[in-house]
Amino acid sequence: MAPAEVIAEWMKKPEEERKEAEAKMRTEWDAWMAEHKDSVLNTIALGKTKRVSESGVEDTKNDMMLSSYVQAESLEAAAAIFANHPHFQIPGATIEVMETRPM
Image (cartoon, rainbow, N blue to C red):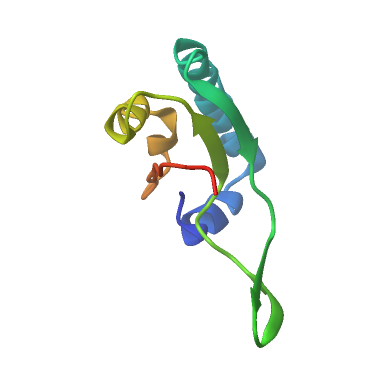
């Protein structure tokens, strides 16, 4: 998660400034992914959002940027994988970890 207002402000910065910081984070992200390659099953970037309710469909924004599936012995172990993640370089960024189970 990264606050939508933080991302909007980030996009107002000069492109060269953003590119340099984004390249640094990407390098650190790739290193993190390599370190946890046995636990991270997949990671996907999330895009535009629609909210669907009984009132209809509308554009919306939320703080979700990425989604990853990881495997671990417990929820606590899964959460520990994300300690010191490069994502925390984004002001206000958080990572939420949830268990999944078959329906």
